[in-house]
Length: 317
Image 1 (cartoon, rainbow, N blue to C red):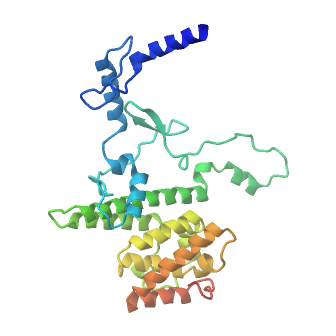
Image 2: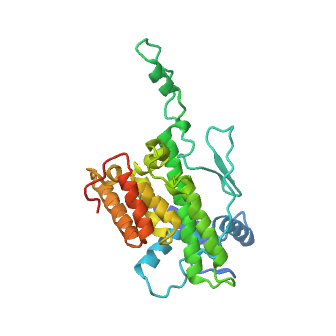
Image 3: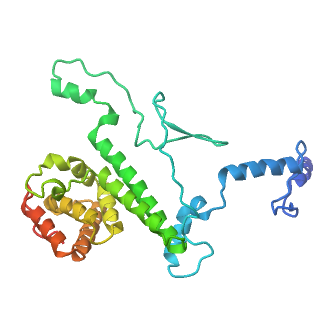
């Protein structure tokens, strides 16, 4: 009997919070409380929704909308998978005094930046004082993690992927919107982003200065080699080639860099099946680019193979 009475009291206390049958003028459930009025509760809900929702499915629900667009290609969707507008985002301001940078967001506190840029050390230990440590080992241990070459390569890859996402936004915006200038300004902005990615990869154009391909050394492509040595870097390179306009100078420069290091890229397939698939996909993309080249671009790419410091792979495709 005592349990039945306590359960009945609990049901009575929950009646004030039953929102199944009550709806406000805005279509929200109408909550009631002992200490707050309905208007106060709805005011708090509005503040939370404004801070966390922008009524833009492309921003709020990007991955789900991308899956819907991929599954229903060619069908009419309620919302086109494209941004409503393109914004020029300012560079992220990072506080140099903090051990880890944060992004200031109104009503949401502080959001940490990606740890790829300024990773926190897992453990700080003093360097060994034994006499067996050589000078080279001591110098290597004194290098901060932020200055490690491979970490810089990973940061470059992340920046490059962000640029490619901006290019995707422009392509989708042009696909579903009619602009007054026919999209000329957007296409120019797209080309600037692609050229910025080429500069980020530090690609060397042998024909840009002297026109000779035999003056390049491996140190000139050091950043490029570090990036493509990582599976994510090869993914970035393949996607970069797919977004480049066919027959352009930038595609020629990228393909010449690839042809100089065919054995490094395609000489041996890795043991990991995932990396194997990435390498095969890159080879297919490069093959597609070669088929769309004119004779001049194809000739300089073949010259890059001949003038390379390494022996080419037997059959990359």
